[in-house]
Image (tube, each protein chain N blue to C red):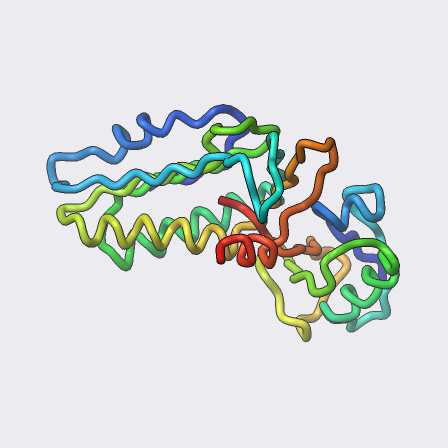
Length: 80
Length: 144
């Protein structure tokens, strides 16, 4: 299945785009998304342990991901 | 209760008027502004970016949590995105409550949870022309 992953801040800068589409096996979980995105930004200057949001909520590493989910990489936040 | 991500200047005094009510004996206004130095680096300005839909949802959740815990509906928060200059207001929170203790506590809760949870990022512009995304680790280190 293909999953579109939204990118922000340093991750968007590192890949030069606001999102990336990745191929994952059926049954993939949040940690698989993270592994794939981290392989894409390897060598770039980005925070090592971003969080992941699925459908606009922070997700655990073992949460399943489906093709219709809105998935986003959330580097350390700095609002306020 | 109201929460908003905005791309225009925040009028903090308007938020204070918004929560005013004769039930309340105390109003607290928190205003966050862009300062000229972070972690020892002179800053000339910065830009905020956000995962808009999720940030809006988190702010709404945080305000609802505070409203329930401190039993007041009179809470408003606005956070700005885009390019900001030194001294510009990046965030404003107004809370009104019958009593001052709860008003302070609720306002504190909203800003601390916003900083912890809201998917908002800031990129600082330095005097030498460089820019960099601020990490929370940097912020924590700078706060020491």
